[in-house]
Each structure stands twice: as C-alpha cells, then as structure tokens.
Figure 1: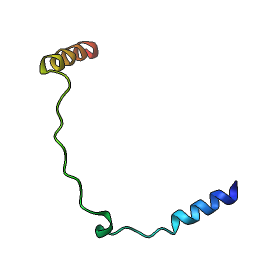
Figure 2: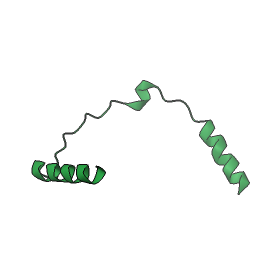
Figure 3: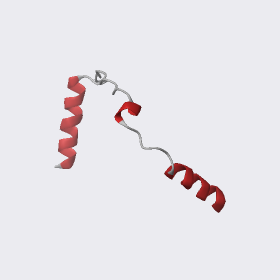
Figure 4: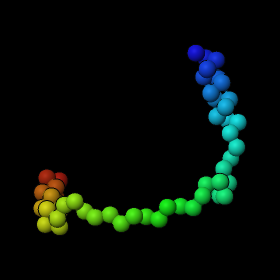
Length: 53
C-alpha cells in the first residue's frame, strides 16, 4: 500500500505546470434566476432577523 502511495505521489509531483495557453479560455458567467419570489425572500429575511435578535 505504501508503494502505491509513493508511486501516486511521484506521478503527481512530476506533472508539468500548466501555462495560460494550456488552460484555455474561461467560460463566461451564465445568468442565474432566483427560484424564490422577492416576497418569499423578504419574508425569510424578516424571519431570520427576528430569530437573530
């Protein structure tokens, strides 16, 4: 088991360092929409504020 661990560590340490060209272009952020309505979010927020105080 120790041999397998040492071999895995050695292989991991010998991997080349990625350059910017290797990484590719970043994916643009996708728009996200809320699953709760604003009224429901406000109600939850008020309830949490009451609990905290």
